[in-house]
Length: 263
Image 1 (cartoon, rainbow, N blue to C red):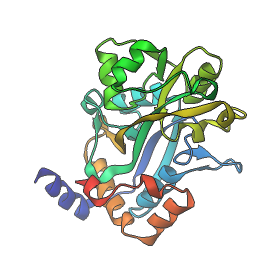
Image 2: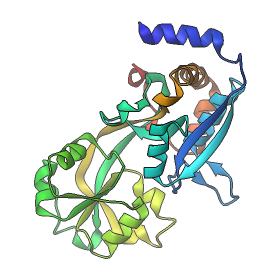
Image 3: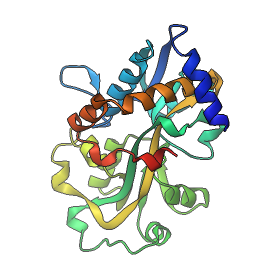
């Protein structure tokens, strides 16, 4: 009921004032969602749908691209209004507002190993057994999946490194770790930074973890009005053919949320 009332309020107040949305993004190659094209233009599925939804309200978007941990701190302090590619967690909900209609895509995660060790490193669930046997790492500040985050909270030997996903792949290639955890599209995002990555690294068979919703999350310091106004505009944009066209252009149809995911 509260969400419905906010939507009604925002519907009749949006557009009253010009607004610049200060949007935080990770400064990384997060293809196909957020990346800098060869032309030098910032683009990707998230980038384009946010711009379209904002334009529908007459908003401008100012993109702030910085290392992920800094972007999260800026969201917490209110220095940016919102951040994309945000998974929901109890810790983040203390400073970030996640609305159902601000869901951008559904992500999955997996384990990556070197191809040369595929016959040696096998996945036999649960994940806690795997991380107890092998040297496994995740990048700090990334919510890979709920199971991995629970293991970290319970002091299992799942190492967190303050590096980008591409740097973590390099550590895997150089045998610093036996395996790493990342999003199911992490290799696609990192292969431009690492030559011949697909020839050396592969996802571990049988180690695909449950879907993780990714949002544009709004800072609670900025107030909730922006979040609700954007939710209305984004819902309206999803009904337009341009939404599907953008998804097809970036080949993310498989990651699009279904209607039930917005409940």
